[in-house]
Amino acid sequence: MIGVETMSLTLLFIIGLCITQIVATISLVTYYRKWVTKMNGMMISMSLGMSAGILMGTILGVIHHGNLFESTIYSIIIGLTVGFIAGIPIGLPAVIDGALSGLMGGMMGAMLGDMVATTSPNAIINIIAFIITMILFLVLYTTEDSIRQQSNQVIFSFFKHPFLLIFITAILFIGLNYI
Image (cartoon, rainbow, N blue to C red; front, side, top):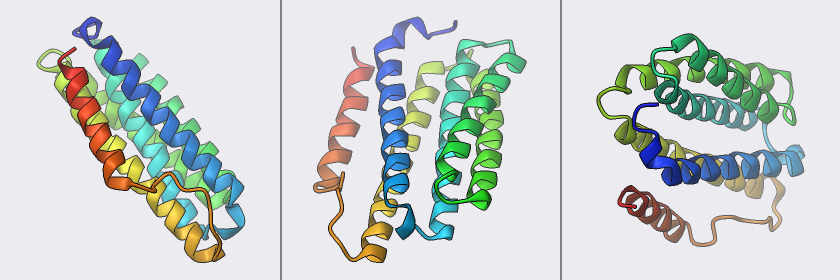
């Protein structure tokens, strides 16, 4: 466990934030599934599966440094499961797309985590987590915007103040690095 002991609060924040974003996006798609186009649904499941796979693969690659097989299998399972679940409300093409993207993201994340675990594990996890968090914000925003355009009705929105949300997230990432 190289460097993981010192970042437990940051790691919990990262994992909690990403799980919240993934669950919010899947819930939104499930509730408004008749207004989500097939193409947007495939993009959503692919993005969620790949993001979960890369992030968890990087974290598990750092935690299980030297045991690439174990970190790869766990991250593939996580990414594949998230992509599969995200695609279920849309249909079979979205399920296949999400599952394959999660599988690929899990493999890439585990390799990345294992390769950089000895040099700078905290930095790579924070960089990947910040990028994935911002991508998940974009996916959630795109999902809301697509549903809003298709349904022509008022929907629940996470993005009443998007810049404030992104600013607070950036400050939290920076602040947790110094704790």
